[in-house]
Length: 277
Figure (cartoon, one colour):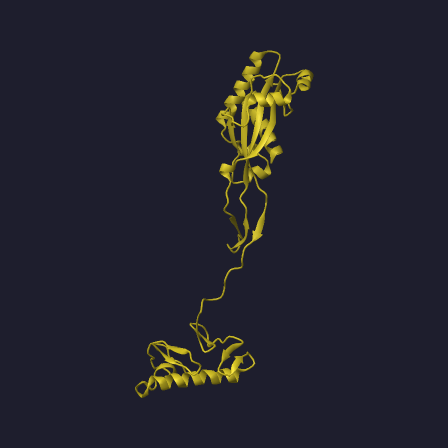
């Protein structure tokens, strides 16, 4: 990411500020030794600080969808944004020429609040986040231009403080949960036997407890006997006036909402409008 920003800045300066003039564009630190070896007009863009822009960090993940199915197959962490701080200086034989170079660079950076996409590399050009340029803005209280020059051992001279805010995609993803394909069902449990309402037929829990102890999947006869006993007790508790209704009603009969004691000490729910064979 840093090398792509360097190349894009050099291309932007050559196209917007230098206009084909024979000026070298370098990214060296302007130390005393470097200044002593310089023998041609030079525009130096020195990267001196790299920090994350915490105000632009996103904590929400982004779904990665399959183009064919449209289902999210993974989740991705959004790219983080980093502030690359550059010290832009001009080096010629006369201060007037240096000022003209700085003025042309300042105008180019102001006209382009973001680096044009055609100057970016492959990874930055394909990103959904642009590379933002901020020039000659106020510096934070934790650092100053004078401190930068003192650290390099050079003499203070006119310069532009350029900040490029670029995204860095860490390519960190994790798989998403599989989609739920089964329909929703509501179960009513009584006496250790679970019957499914809205599903296909009764669904009994393996190992459920009935009057005779644990019932496993290998005891279908015992399970049917338990269900039959529960229904008979419910019909007896309903009274003679309720014959043919409730849990023991025939096909097409309507039961009544209510509860009745069972042989196991529990209660059986009768639902109006639902008939059981």
